[in-house]
Image (cartoon, rainbow, N blue to C red; front, top):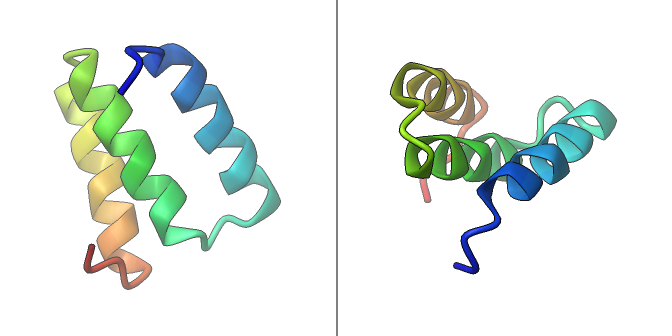
Length: 56
């Protein structure tokens, strides 16, 4: 919400590193990537979140 998408991606990457099955972190990474116009990467992150059971 503060526009700090690059920082958000780094935070999500750290959360995912600590727990690769953390679906919400994958989804949040997708949101940040999408905000930066990185659509294909965002779609991959969303797909991973769904694969892990994210229904958000």
